[in-house]
Image 1 (cartoon, one colour):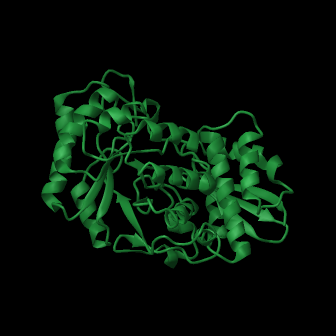
Image 2 (cartoon, one colour):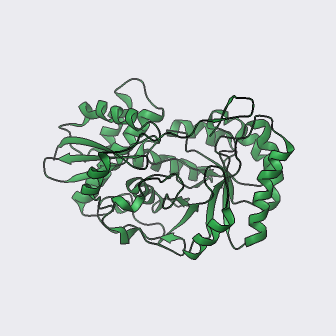
Image 3 (cartoon, one colour):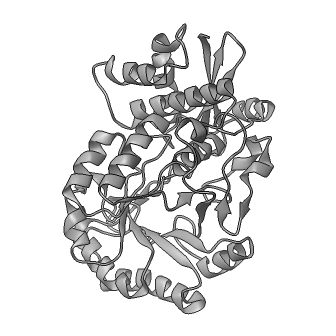
Length: 382
């Protein structure tokens, strides 16, 4: 079997799907994208074609290493996202050829169902109580929300109080019947992170995500030493080599690699195993589409330390497209009592609605996150 063609499709709301075709008619799907930089990743995928066309798709490890090492410059969001989507599609092909789900090829199930969580509250968190109530009716009891709006590197007591009051209202409304993580989203710089963590601690959030940006990872152990709240990070870390240094330094309780950003299934299996060696749990980042979610689940179901899985159904980013819009086998993505079962079909388990993908790709928007500014006019982290 040989790879004969790679085709990318940018689709709403902000995703890109990749189709890899073979000379024997077996097709694999991947999801290579950086949100807001889809066209750049698309070009990177095209630049990888010379390593792939005419090659045996079953040699995933060799193709991965070739894409990673043969270009001399390596790593980073764009290159690793291109590799990630290609890697997903190669695993999809292998599973279909073998007639098995990818998790069976990775050693088989370590659990029977996977705990899922849902976003609430939007970019600037609001109406959270009502959003949680609606999602609880659908069986969810675990959530994640943005912790703050714009926050200066040194901000006011009023700004801190506003963030804390929102969390206090959630605990007052629901007690311990729900769990929720708080995403600092890179909006909180180190001088304010320590303050916020201290003030939030009495409300016992499940975790705080990206307490500071990954480029300030030296603060993870320092912040962890000041709080009992588990700290999570990893969506803006793109290889096991970045995670290696963070794990060694300590401070993280939850690793959050993104299966469409951090080299795909092949690389994230290694990151998951490294995390387990450090007694760090795994909760893959995934505010993306169906193939990305399926790839995450393949890793979740074979990784002992996987504890939570993000998913994008109904997320506030989804304008013009939803996860199940591009899926034929919607019934396999059913979430019951906050859990998903393993996707049963061969490969990644997604039957992509190709006609819908093609139609949607004809008018795909170039999504960009908003540009926020502080009161003094300087750019704020979104």
